[in-house]
Amino acid sequence: MNLNFPKLSTYQWSCANESQQFVVENPATGQIITTIQAGDATTAEQAVHAAQQAFKERWGVLTATERSKYLLRCADALEKHADELATLLCMENGKPVQDARMMDVEFLVGVFRYFASIVDKLPSQFYDRGSMYTTVVHEPYGVCCGILPFNWPPIHTGGKLAPALAAGNTMILKPGEQAPLTVIRTVEILQEILPENVVQVVPGLGPEVPQALVNSPLVKMVSFTGSTAAGAAVAKTAAATLTKTAMELGGKNAMIIFDDADFDQAVRDALGGAFFNKGEACTATSRLLVQRGIYSQFVEALAAGVKQIKAGNGLKPDVHVGPQVSKAQQERVLEYIELGKSEGARVAAQAQLPSDPECKNGFFAPATLFADVTENMRIAKEEMFGTIVTAMPFDTFDDALRIANSSDYGLTAAVYTKDTLKANRAVRALEVGMVWVNNYNRSILGTPFGGIKHSGYGREHCIETLYDWMTTKTVNTPSGLGAIPSWRAVDQIFGVKSSNGH
Image (tube, helix red, strand yellow):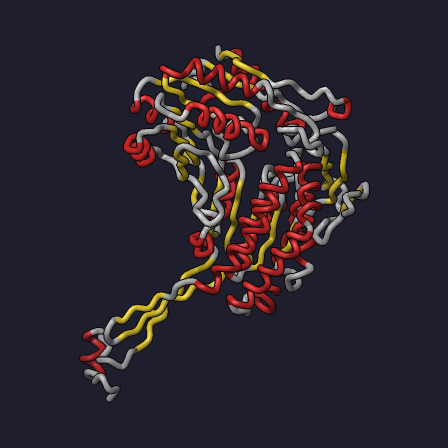
C-alpha cells in the first residue's frame, strides 16, 4: 500500500496549463498531500470522445450478463484495496479510518455487487394487444457523467458508477476538488478490469470541467451530488441541451422525539445522526424537535454525550470525529457557531478540540449543541454541513410536523414514539424522501435514496436507479391475429387490407 504522492500529480486528462492546479491537504494536519494538475474544457471534451468510442465499440455492445460479470470482478478488485482506499480517504477527507472502512468502502464494494446481481434479471414487459404484440426494452444512454462532492467519495462514486455501468453506459467522473484522490484511485483500480475508457476521471478546478462535460452534446445524462445552488446551476446548463439530470442535493433534516419515545435510544441516535461524518452529510439530523415535557432532560442527556466526543486525526483508533474537510469549510462552521450565539441560541455543550500537537493546524470545529433554538433562526433553516446540531421544543403533534415541513429541503426525517399510529401519521405527513422510525441507521443499499423539494430528484442505490440510467424503447410487432387498424383515408385510397395480407 503506497500512499506517497509526488509533489505534482498528473493524470490521463490533466492539461498543461499551470494555472489549473490545486492542492489537496490533509485536513487533520493542514499539510499538503499533493498538488493536482487539473483538466480543462479541452481535456474534458477529449475524455467525452474517448468515452463515446468506448461505448460504441466496447461496452454498449455487451450483454447484461457480460456486464454483470465485469461488475463482480470490479467489486472483488475494490475489496482487495479496501484498506488502502479507507486510509487514503481518511488522509484527504479527515473522517476516521474505521468509519471510512466500515461505511464508505464497504458500500462501494457492495453497490457493485448489488447492481451486478440484478442487471441481468430485470423483469420483461410484454403486452398482447390483439393484432399487435408490444414489448418494452431498456437501453443505455451512452456517455454519462457524475459530478461528485467531497463528503462520501467512495459512496458517491459507487452510487453513480455501478448502476451506470450496469445499464451499459460509459462514465466520466469529476470529483470534488477538496478530496479527489480516493475517486481517482478507485477509477485506476477499475480501469485495470474494464475495457479502455469505459470509466474515466477528470479532476477539475472550479466550474470549467463540469461545465464542459454538461455542455457536451455527446453527454446524455448527468448525475450530480452537492449543494442545492450548484445543482440548480448544473440543471440549468443541462436544460439548454435537454440533457437528463439526477440531483441529490442538500438537507436540513428533522428528528422528532415525542414524549413517549424510547428516551435513551433517541439520545443515542441524535448524537450519531448529528455528528457522524463530522456533520458533513446531507442526511445529518441537524434539527432536533423534542416534545416540551422531556425537552430539558433530553438536552441535558445529549449535552453529556456531546462533551465526550473526541476529535482528532482519524488514523488513530480512539478518535470519534475528524476535522472539517477544508479550511473554508472549517471557517463556515465556526461562523455558524458565532451566528447561533448572536441569534440568541444557547450553547448547551461543546466538545473539546484536539490537543495533539500534530492537529494544531488542522481544520477542526468543535461539536456544538445549540438549545432553545427558534424556527426563525438561520441556524434552524440553513444547511450548515458541519459539527452543529440544534434543539428546539414543541408542544403538539401538529406543531412538530409544521416545523419539520417548514424547511425548503425534503431529504430525511426521523420519528421517535412508541405509538405506532402516531408514527404512521407522522410518516405520511412528512414532506421528505426518506423517514426512519425509532432508528437512524443510514445503511440502506438496495432501497431508494433521495429527496424532494430543494433536496433534489431521482433515486439512488436501488432497482429504480438502474432504470434511471436507461432509456425506454417500445417495440410494436404484428401478431398475425387480425388486421392492424389503419387510417380510413388509406383504406379509401388503397382499399381495405385483409388480415392475411391480401
